[in-house]
Amino acid sequence: MRDLPQHKPVLAGAAYNSIPGAGVRLEALPEGHLLHVLGAIEPTVLAAELVKAGFAKTSIRKAGFRQWFVAGDEPLVPASLDALVAALAGKAFVMDQSHGRVRISVSGRSSRALLSRGTAVDLDPSVFPEGHSAMTMVGHLSVQIVRTGNDSFELTVLRSFAESLWDDLTHMAASAEKDSV
Image (cartoon, rainbow, N blue to C red; front, side, top):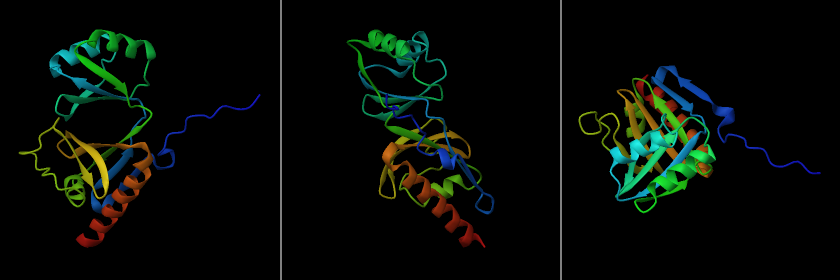
């Protein structure tokens, strides 16, 4: 009998990276669950259905017109996904993206300046408040940016580009540190 492939987090070797002089901390977030929801459903209704289906510890992020990402740290439970799909039938479609996307936390006093080096999105808190999200490019990579706190952001990227984004962020932070000296 042959061994089946085992899941390995794509950023397993890069779970935490602090660049003290640059005032930035990068963290690979748990590869829990990420659902893509499409349809004419209000976020408040979606939130209520998520709780009923067992997704109480999730956040909803706007991903486009009538599109949301539902992200959380806990692994996906198939029964919960089935319950959500049934509850949203006729209102919205749900696609599991857990296997295909990775989340990275960028935090620290210089996190906004770091991200501004790679994207054209205005990340000023008056324009991009906590909870706000945007689909954008960071360098050449398509990324969703979510402000999770005053000096913290979460980036969601396709799994195959996660290492490249991690490397880009690390290099941008190192460059920022050199520029400030």
